[in-house]
Image (cartoon, rainbow, N blue to C red; front, side):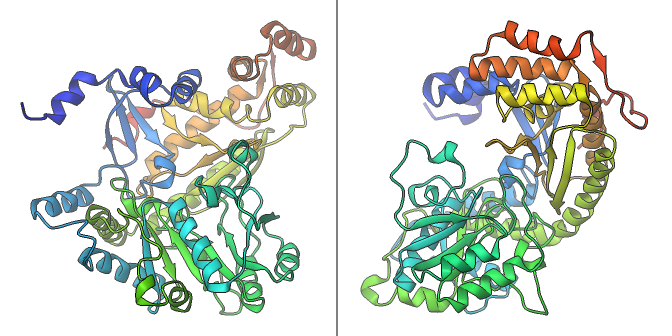
Length: 501
């Protein structure tokens, strides 16, 4: 009997969470059910998802910035189908694959690095591992510096320079020589480099976890300091690359006196996949490459079975073509500016919003302690329960009431992060802003529906007694208290009716 994929999927659909809990990751399945994210998605197009009941969702997560071109882009899908129809050889291994050479050439042209060599990986974290190895080999030094609150992946080397204890705990001891400094702190970097043992400083141009943006000139000066001290400067553009911030690379927007960043290595991944086939790339200065691959007997001293897989190369080539044709960098700048202005206007009205920041379509809303006594008391209760909970009171109702998928930054940051596909429209931005406004209005009632969410999550997360939480809320609020906000509130949002495909 021939295998029928379509029939197999149709028979199994709806058992997603049962299968996941039984065979894959029981705890993650439990998390999704707890926060109300346990939907069964059956179709995707552009910035939208549909579930098995036909409901439409707006995707402001884009697979952790993987789907920059939108989901199931027809041009990328056609390119993959065209390749499969050719019966072209792949994974020969003892050959020079045509498609990897083509993709490397495109990446070098777009980054204006004509003399580089390109190593292809299967993911961003594999790219970071390659950068660590290359830096140590090229410099003969053991030290790797990263920034606090950084995220560079979860494999062993990358984990050693991960800035969050919740990821690193239980997996030590970590890589010797790995250490961290505050982000956007040139003095700290200068002091570490002065120790003379640093192979590389690996840094995200904009930190992904909290969308932390450095001061103007920081990256340019950091690269200069590294060159001065014989260390390599590595730009981790895994999340910020391929138009996310409004230019092909985030470092393209950094310049001081005409001098750009000019890293020794650039690590890319995520959006190069087109949302279809994982692929990563490390663009490496030839002087570094020649020290790693220094002779014919070291020609494959660093490699991977799947690192030049043809389907991955096709996905990368097609994704770059779509990026150009649809001018997605321009759309990222334009939609990002509208979104940033809209969120900043709300910041002036709602006490919980401390800061709005972003570049292109990589944005964050950070929440903080309000001025009003009643809201201040509520904030303190939530923080005492768990510092990660407050942002969940925003993303959960965005999903439950408005069918918008987005994420919290987590790791003790009261931050909601927005990384939608670069193809979103003004109607999609309006859908989000109206929905976010309504969530803010409800959040500024204490106690109210949003705090019911927090109470439920807090009980699940830390095993708190609900009666104690109820008592704490009652002690500071008495009867239901509504804290007024400035300005009118839009009416209910019919999310799926906006921005139809």
